[in-house]
Amino acid sequence: MKEHASIFNDVLGPVMIGPSSSHTAASVRIGRALRQMVAGKITYFQADFDPEGSLAASYITQCSDIGLVGGLLGMDPTDSQLTRAIEIAKEDGMEILFRVVPYENNHPNTYKMTIKTDLNERLDVVALSVGGGMIEITEINHFAVEVTGGFYETLLFGSQFTLEEAELSKKISKFCFAETKEQAGETLLHIKTQQALPDDEVAWLKQRMTVNRIIAFDPVLPIMSQKEAKMLFSTAEEMIALAKKDELDLADMALRYESHRGSISEEEVYRKAEEILEIMINGIKVGLAGTSYDDRMLGSQAPKIQANRQKLIGDALPAKIIENISALMEVKSSMNVFVAAPTAGSCGALPGTLIAVSEYQKKSHDDLVRALLAAGMIGVFIAEYATFAAEVAGCQAECGSGSGMTAGALVQLMGGTIEEAVNAASMALQNVFGMTCDPIGVRVEVPCLGKNMMCGMNALGAANMSLAGYDVVVPLDETIESFNKVGRMLPSELRCTGHGGLAQTPSGLAIAERLDCPLDCC
Image 1 (cartoon, rainbow, N blue to C red):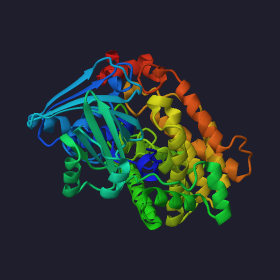
Image 2: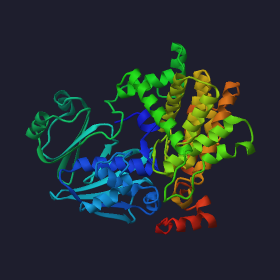
Image 3: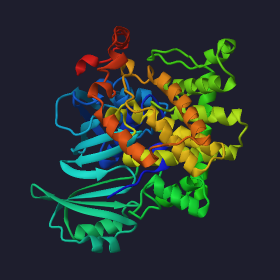
Image 4: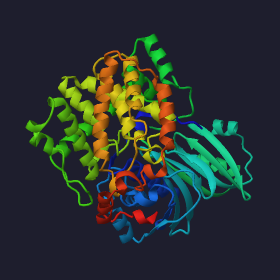
């Protein structure tokens, strides 16, 4: 079933500690889901990564290993103990094995995993990290499934099942979707609901099916999915037409969209945006105070802007944008709490630029919150029709997407129309086609920091162009479609593998060796 993108699930989030949303936060969510699938104490965990994918080189440097194990221990993506997850698990008797072995897969961020417990349970799971911390579990005990973390999931393995979906929908509370599959003489009944199945409903199912095993787990995303409903609009063009009819701006449409998508009130949507903004603002403060972390190539850079202000070109605004972006990127790299927006690798561009411009223009708190929501609405279209995963479409998918979102947000901040905001986003995206992802040492630092700064400035330029009345030429819907196609044309060496670009320069290779980056594993 189709689960539409959410502003807080897919775009402005997750709230996490670094360094990578695709590799760290996503792996925590996968681990948390796996932990719920078994009843016993986990005694053995194995994860395999294909050498042709991205994770083979990055699972250590971008903390997929600690993320998976932390999730298995019940940690969330903000847990300060996450960096010690493997140590804690081993002390508790868990045997842990990570392997780089060839296997067939259709996605560069594929996790192939096995769990064993002290109750003699065995669980074989395949999962994907699809960008920005979002996940998809595609296989459980060799049955193909579609699990994205937004529902309560109940899987009943057995035989002699005869129920129809219509009967299930009448009996099962908060029912959303059901599917049955047959494989090797075994039947899987997979039910998605908006609450955990009560014991009496489980008993009713057992009366109508011979059940050998039940696997059940809760959502791992902040905004729950619901039974598919007709969305308010599916394209930016449709959104603009509806907004003009009702005399609304981009922030208004974001409130409407997320409220409808998540079955929550517009007031709740607004408060959630406020919470996200507070974390962003605090991140700038933490970064400017100076950060440190042993496993990092860059020292604290953000304080240098203020210290050398007299040497810098231009007025206070560009300097403040650079300073803010630096601060947020360094918070990420030092394993402090931040917001992926839309990813960890692009976490600086949107909040760093938006907050700097808001302060410079003396905008109100409400103006800033609404601008952040506007950014989220632009991000929804990218999430729906393209990707935020650099492993799939290069850095244009991460920093580039952040730039488009920022441009739309800046126009909203300045009181521009919804057409101007959407056009600004399109202009910004048009400027970043083909941006490679070539992180040195497969760490999210260089050239990630510079690309966040570039995309912040690009957003500022695109916003001004749109506000001034420049012709967008190609509308946002068409731009996103082309943006997606171009990103997927990039060779795998330039999609977060460490096998091309700056990562393969003599200096880049020397840093990788110093930081024990396993580039030779692939």
